[in-house]
Image (cartoon, helix red, strand yellow):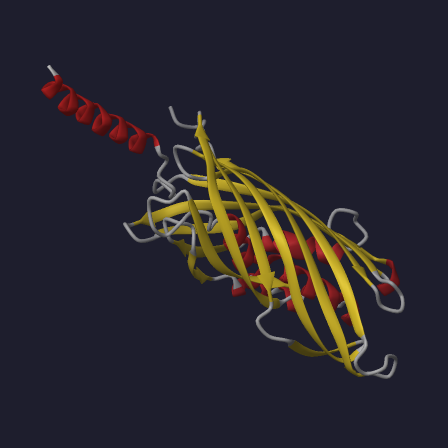
Length: 315
C-alpha cells in the first residue's frame, strides 16, 4: 500500500504546480490588429523655488491618447496615435504667466491645441510596452511656429509649454512611465525597468522597480517605486545667469491592468522631484549659491478598449 502513496503524491504535486502556473497572469500586452485603446491622464503639478522671489508655479494638464493597432508580429506592436480632448493651464504669478486653453483668454493657445488634435503619428512598442520607434510627431509642431501675428514673447512661452507637455520627449516619458510596465523576461513576480525620463527638458536616468501584487477577477495589480537621478550636471544660461543643476526624486505607482488585453485600466502615481541649481555667474546672485526647487506631481491615468463605431447608414 505504501508503495503507491509516493507516486500518487507526486502526480498530485505536479498537477497542482501546473495549475498554479496556469493561473499566473502573462505579463505582456495582448492586443489585436484593428482594435483601438485609450489612455486619459489628469496631471496636477506644483513647483516651489527658493529663489529670491520664492516662485510658485501651478500646472494642470488633461490628455487623452488614442492608440489604434495597425499590425503586429511576435516582437512588435505597430500603432497609430492621436491626441484628443487636450486641456492645459499654467499659472506663475511672479513670472506674469497665466495661460489656459479653455479660458478663452489665450486664443492662440486654443488654436494650437486644436491643431495638435488633428494630427496622427506612429509608434512601435514591444510586447512589454517599451517604446521602440516614434515617427511623425515632429510634424505636429512644425505648423505651430508659423501661426499668426502674435506677441513674440507670448508665442515663445506657449510653444515651449506645448512642446514640453506634448512633444516627443514628453511622449517618450509618458510611455516609459505608463506603457512600459511589464518585464522583458518571463515569468517574473518582481522586475526592474531602466528608463529615461525628461523632466523640464532634462534627460534623467530612472529605475522603476515593480512587483506583481495579485491577480484577481479581471485585474492584474502591479505596484512600483521609481528612483530618478541625473547622471551628470546640466549647464545652461537662464534669467539668473549661468547655472548648473542636478535632478533627483522618486515616484510611486499603483497599476490595475486588464487581465485579458494587458492594457492599463487605472494608475495612481505620485512623483516628487528636487532640482538643485548652483549659480556659476550672475548679476544678481553670488557664485556658488545653491537654489533648490521642489516639484510634486500627481498622475491619474485611466484607460480601456474603445468600442468600435457602428455605421448607422448600413442596412
